Image 1 (cartoon, rainbow, N blue to C red):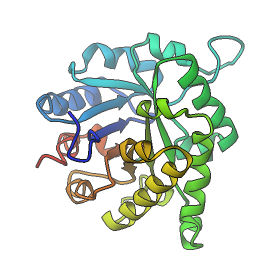
Image 2: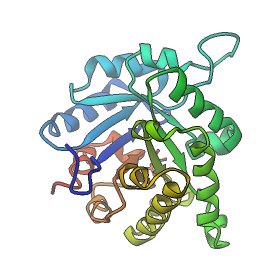
Image 3: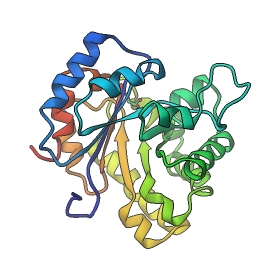
Image 4: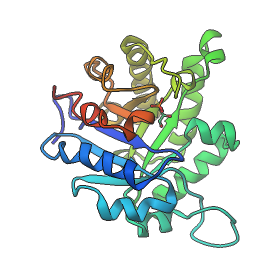
Length: 254
Ligand SMILES: O=C[C@H](O)COP(=O)(O)O
């Protein structure tokens, strides 16, 4: 069921390079208490453990890969294909996380090819990440940077494919730092993005696309962020591995 604005609240848990049976148990226990909550929940464990999570997760929870390549198979050492992601039981893939952009040099051009492949060759949904660095924010370039990043994705998204895409705005300076964007800082960027996305698509797309926030979201700050009209959910790193993930999934309800 969608919220009053027509957009269903969405919470992703990006486990990054973290996994143990104990962590999976903690997350499953937290998520077992979210069955009756009107929220779309997606967990993204490391690729090697996707099948374990698919086998043990509560039924209402979906699974994502943290990354994928842009071919079905072949000589691409170390990569996994969208088709493999699908076969393992994922409905989603995260693309363009800032750690992929910074540490593994994935740029807008490469990411646009990836989203093109995923949307057109498979039925997997995409969490498409964007976000500015601290230097870019301090230079007053936040809107310019997120516009460039989102436009690259938009070049490959047809109007009827936006329902398969969630945009994750994750300011790099807020990721893993404990320095969360204020609700108003996040709202301002989300509102700007919604308008910008509409210009490159349609008014209906602007109204319906879900734009989620990521960067030091936790059980204590999630409620205030969730009250903002253009924040449609979260992409959570560290706190998605802890019992407080339950509170984050319930941020709109409590
Ligand atoms: O994908 C998640 C983001 O990188 C946020 O990570 P964090 O919640 O640990 O700051």
